Length: 135
Image (tube, rainbow, N blue to C red; front, side):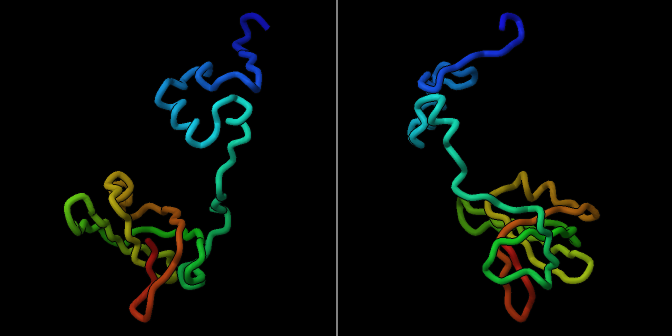
């Protein structure tokens, strides 16, 4: 098909022939066992996260991954633990309950958490008598 932008590739073609795959990226894919186009097409994620089932904070199961829709009720607080390790903590609410969220070493994600906006949080819920938390 000339001029249509379609690029035919055989399954046994090296992934280095693909646009956007240079030497470094090819080496990373080869570590995963994907050195050909066919192997790359059969490289599946090791797990799936289901973000479609939103759970209330007070109904979130302990030590089981779940998705919670909540909004920050205060500003994100930064805690420097040691060199190279920074924790960002914020309290969120879903309108019924509150939960403390801890983010590890991700200043970009923490900066996006602004009060007045809803966010989805995914992870294992925990906590004790003092309240719920998720890391």
